[in-house]
Length: 539
Image (cartoon, rainbow, N blue to C red; front, side):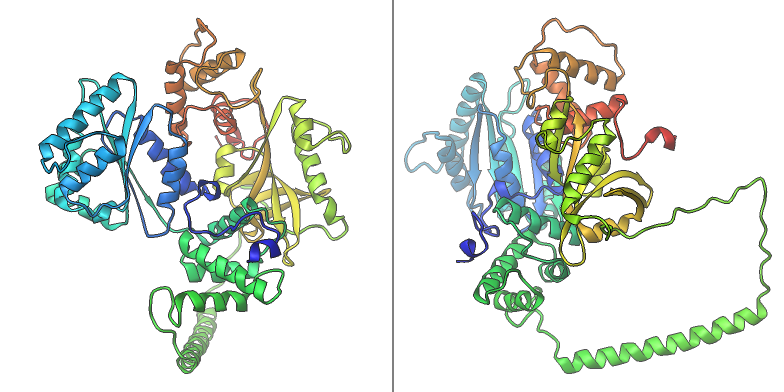
C-alpha cells in the first residue's frame, strides 16, 4: 500500500531472505567468508549460529548465489526428522533413487555413497545444508557425522553446513557429540546489530528499494535500536509497520509517535522481552527516587571536594626545556560551513578527492568516476564502517547528515588516533571520530589504482597482462622471488593463492580479483597512493 506513496520500487522491509537486501556489516562479511571457506575446504563441518532473525538464512542464500556450477546442494529445511527420514530427504534433494518404502539405513547410505563417488568422478562437489540444526536429535546428528566418513584417499565426498540458534553450540559441547564437534573446520556466531549498524541497515534497504528521501530521520534510530534489540527481523517488522502508519497519516517520513504505535501493534502492551510496561506512577516514583539520590551524592561530593582543597597542598607546576609541550589539535564540529553552498558539497568533495590523486576535476567533462577512469583510477561506492575504511586505507567522500536531516558530502583525508581530518568545501577541519558516528550512516566513495589492462573483476581462466601483475603482487606480498609466468592465464594455482590472500585479509575468499582485493594487494606491497593512515609515520 505504501510502496507507490513513497515512490519505492519494492517493499524494503520484507522478512523474505532476499540476498539483494543483505546488509554486509563487518560480521556478516566474516560469516559469509566462513561459509565460502568451508566450501573450498576438503571436508568437515561449517557451523553458523545466531539468534532468531539475525540474518543466517539470508547469508546462506547469498552464499548459494556464489556457488560454482559444479556444485550439487541438498537443502534440509525441516530438521525434525528421524534418521531414516533425514536420509530419504537427502536422497530426494540430490535426485538419488532408492527402493520404494525403504526403511533400511544401510540401503540409504549405500545409495548416497554410490552417488557421491559418481559425482566426485565427474568433478562435482556435494554440499548438505541443514537449517534450524538445533532441532536435530542426538541420533540424527551422529548419523550426519557418519556421512562425512564417505571419502576418497584425497578428500571428503560430502561437505556439511549447519545453521542454527545459539543452543546448537551448547548441543555440540556435549560429551557424546565431541567427535562431531572435532570435525568442525570453521564456525561463526552472528550477533545483533549495533546502533550505528541499525541506521546503516535501514538506509541500505531503502536505497535498494529506490527511496529518494530519508524516511527514518536520525531522531528515530535510537528508538528503533532499543525496540528491536538490533535484530534485523524485528527491525524489518517495525519499519514496515511504521511506514504503513506514516502512509495512513499522510506523513512524508516516520516520526517517533508513529514508531511507538507500530511497536504496540507488533509487540502488544509488552516490550520485546514479553514483560508488561511499567505504569506512569511507578516510572515517576523511580525518577523522583533517582533524583534524590543524585542530589545527596552531589552535596556529599561538593563538601568532600571543599575539605580536600583545604588540606591538600597545591602541586608546583614544572616545565622542562628538554621536554617540549605537545599541543593538542583544536577540534571542530562536523557541520557544513554556513558561508558555502551546501547544494555543491557533492561536487566540491569529489573535486578534493581527485586532487588527492593529482587529478584536476573538470565540472562539465563527465562524472567523477568517468574522469577518474581516464587516469587509471576506479571508483568504489559502498557502505561500511570506519573499521572497513581503515582496512582499505584510502581517502573517501562520506555522505553525512546535519541535525535537520539535510545531506552533505565531505572528504575524509586522514585518521589519527581518535581524530579525523576532513575537507569540507574549502575548509579543513579536525574532528573527534565520535562526531562521525552522529552524522554518518556508512555511505562512502573512494578511488583506487587499477592494474594495467584492467577492465572488470578478474575471474579464473582470464588472460592478459593483468594476470602477470596479479602474480607479481602476490609474490611480493609473500616475500618470494618474482618468477616470470610461463603463460598469462589465471590458472588454478593462482586462484588458490588469491583465495589464501583474501582469507588472510578478512575478504570473501571467492578467488575473484576485484576492487577490495586489489586495494589490499597494493597496501601489502606499499604502493605510492593516498592513504588515511601513514603506517610509515607510526613506525
